[in-house]
Image 1 (cartoon, rainbow, N blue to C red):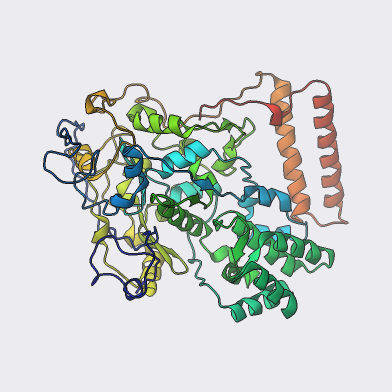
Image 2: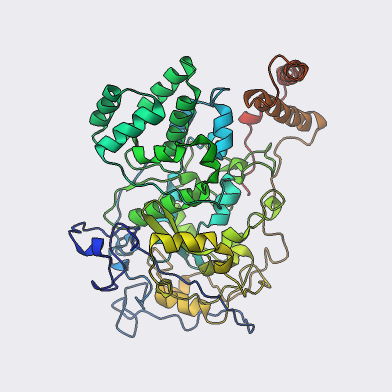
Length: 566
């Protein structure tokens, strides 16, 4: 059976995996419990009408719905959110709060710097090179925590007043440009001797050095600082494959596999870089998403005090947060590079109010319209089923968020509709993913469109609001939105610099400088050839042009304050 940490959502002891029934003393349920979902077709009714919320359950004077079940503010029907009893949203509704430490390792990526020219080809070939450029030094804590409070691990979605939304494979594909196809990253935790063996063989250290590091790290893990020192040493000694593995392990440990330790990365991830020529065959985007699902699910419980994972994925809600649009962004780059984050952060209290007041007009359902030329929606993006990283399994339920793909949203089937299966079956379904994508969908006449009865059902089974308030004071969802109805579902980059030819030319030349530098770093041209010399000459000319323009008063791109729309 599939091995996950934690228990299954109130399915009874006989339905739980054996590992969950034996010796599981952990009090807090975690997000790695197996999800159930739908592998059948998602049939949507043709008769679609605008939802009304007149039959949303009302609370009595004691805060409980008239049927006498459920929780104040929802869920009134607890068949979906079976672990709401322990959820942070319940604590906030009751007037309590908590302090959560958000752990980010992005600055450590910048500390290590870009790969050495002799290591860069390995990084490029691995498929992980976009992570070297997405350097969000500052996390918008209020925005990240505000969404985390609305995450429910039973569905792997955010529950909002307008329905469910989530981070999908398509989001990872568009934001990070990491592969969402290929093999699962199948690694498992290593024992001490196994860790010694893999460190000596794949990083080139001797046994004494490997043992010393494992002993200091107190387990099958190594310090990120140790990897940086090892990388520098390998580069000095021109041990390029060892250097490449140290760099890549450090990179994933700071990004897609970031954990709560803020210091360590598990040794078993090094197995993914045993054969550097096969790295690109892994679905790195799948791994990033599953690891984030795990971290969000764990942090959504009231007694959790930390949140980790690759948090830049939580900062790309176009109409929220304090990010700024980078005015030199081009759509061939990962969408995450469109934004610049600063020290200013959103207040969690403000984000809670904003999300509680969310209506259709506040949503951009499909933010990648302009990006589709660079990253088309692929079939993997609408896969419905289990995904895994090693023994960690989560359910990707695209049928719950069809509006994010431009389709009408029906009442989705329960997560429990997908039967349990072992790793071999999970892998086999992924290899045949075309058979398990959501199909028989209906194009949405408006971006917010959902089937008749969807909102009534959602209000019964969910907890759409975080803060207490009278139902009559909530924003109405009955009124059809007007503001964006005939506008594209994307906010274009708005240039904040004056619309002069010199300003536009400066940005263009800077991009040329970056392109020429990458050609040299990645050995697209061979040193000693005429092409190498010409490329160096053009790079020097372009750099001198940029310096001259800036010295004459041209505004530096990094110093601008782009528009926050988008």
